[in-house]
Length: 51
Image (cartoon, rainbow, N blue to C red):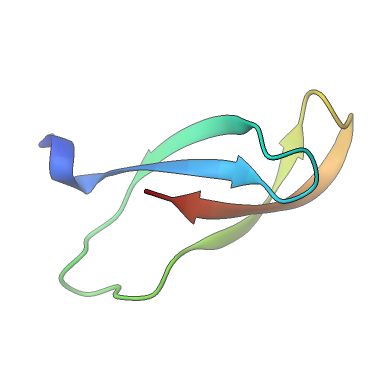
């Protein structure tokens, strides 16, 4: 997998990077927002894609 397809997902509450994922940047132009579990908040929060 190439490095340009990797993305970081950051918690919107505590601003910590908890997850790494990949996406096809040719088909998905907008930034991802997924509801994931945050270890520091100890609950499911929205996680947004960062640079």
